[in-house]
Image (cartoon, rainbow, N blue to C red; front, side, top):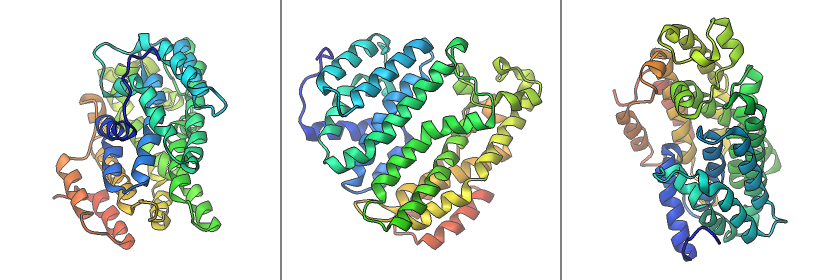
Amino acid sequence: MTTGQPEFTTDADLEWCYDAVHGVSRTFSITIDRLEEPMARHICIGYLLCRVADTIEDAGHIPPETQTELLEEYDRLLDPETETERAVEEFMDEVGPWVPEDRNDDWEVVAQTPRVLRTFESLDEEPREIMRDPVRELVDGMAMFTDRYADEGGLRLQTLEELEEYCWYAAGTVGTLITGLVARGASEDRAEELRNNARSFALLLQLVNIAKDVENDYLEENNVYLPAEWLENEDVPVEAVTEAENHGAVTNVIQRVTNRAETYVDDAHRYLEIVPERHGNRLSAWAIPYLLAVGTMRELRERPEDVIREGDVKVPRAEVYALIQQFEDDVSRSRLEDLRQEMAEKPLHQ
């Protein structure tokens, strides 16, 4: 290989993967800490496979046409018919020049793609095959979007329908991966209901992320996910979403995205009511991100202007700790409704 990476044992690779997730995602870090084996490793590795593509798609320093080519190259190495070692070498040769010298945790995952793939290939065949298609669908969808907006230099979503199409590829595919793993052994009716509600769960979380990250998405990634048609209704040019004179108007659009996310809360809640706890899966692993989304929507409703003024809106750190503390002991599914109502109204720690 051309990566210069030494050989590691499978155990060392897996340990690195766990550490990597803790570095790149607060949400999945919490999730994986709540899971047991083998689900913990399956979700960890599946998420890192997706994160490689997500980092490339978000890279404002890579020309869109190159992003598309890198994503297509990455998809090829995930193809089970591809000779993996050669494909990994070719991908690393292509992506290597774009990895920043002073790389952050996200780019460290990209730089360690061979390690992630090696750990993935060490899994049993059943979870590998459950994970592979959703990951490839995510990669293909991101390549489609970078190609679609290559002339603009970054994503400029036009309509609500296109926003939710993007959300499907960015998060719905991850929901498919997760559901395929947690639904093993469930009845067909239950598995079908899980699949039906997984989309709502994923769109809820992704829309909340889009609503709270408007400034960072534009300034750091050159992406505008707020629908252009909604911005136009407020007389805001797409390239002026962070301008001070547009704060009030952009706030109105952020509220619309938040309201759209709200429409998925009930179905996402139903997902939690029926998700099986087997193969190391635990209700709390998914209930905590769900409830954090509920709390973030509360913050977005109360102070949407802070998305632009401060660059982000999050639930208070003390609330995160208070929520995790709720799950130190097993929490009944009926308790979820109470927590949802409490967090929709005020911070849990108050």
